[in-house]
Image 1 (cartoon, one colour):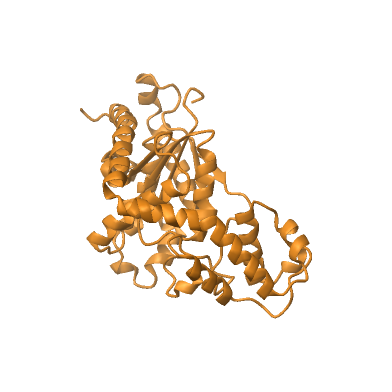
Image 2 (tube, rainbow, N blue to C red):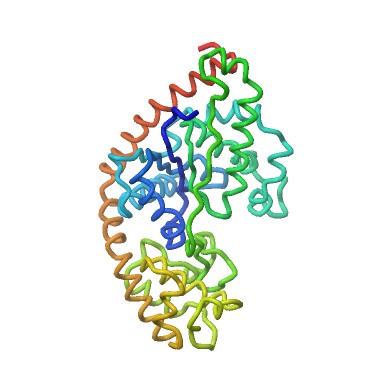
Length: 344
């Protein structure tokens, strides 16, 4: 598989506003990866409908997610930016991979248990099966690398297991069709660096999430300067001053979170930030964090709003990206059909 290009695939759901956690935990990484890899960045609207969605909101949120990619610095000409539902091969390959994956593998997926809650019998089949679609998202492009956070590691492991089982199950046919010993590369994780796991502003033990009831738990990328300032001022802290070293952050999740956000936005280490602000009270530190956050996020917010109002441009980017993605996906899907034994 050494002849395959080093290709990155990653997706973001089109469900609600993207927030600071998405930006620091994923999108800044996407911007860096485009310098060294062929990248496909997908708005995964098929994954979004595993839970009920308002159709008008879904369309708007798909455009908003694409606009966020571009506003944050992803170049839609250098990379392929598209929405999943425009490339039918994702769903087509998912069915074949459903016949490769094992029920026991899916039963071990912890996110389904968390999202379905106690009423699992009423959860959709899509919610149960979406890790296989996620594997198809990656494998349809024979992607070699996937940027992942802690909550997606298990899903990437499933994609790796499916790729290996497909290669093993169809080894003879893969060789007969001229692909050597294997067809799908086993995708490697690109683990995000430190200070990218952003926690709730209201509870340092919980990840920042757009599904949190309280809007004060997160900084949305669509928030203006006043909203950012208000949320940081109200962010939960503890009564002690900031420590002078990282060890002093142990057992202080809210302090650790705010220092981590500052470090990530400033491109500095936590140790460096504490070297400057150690001993300061939180009111002074929060003011500095507000200034930094507004300086970093205001240009993104402004560009997001401009792009969101230009639906023709955003739809054009997604349509162009889908056309380019389909060229890759169709060729790989045809090869899969030949390997499996399906007429085409």
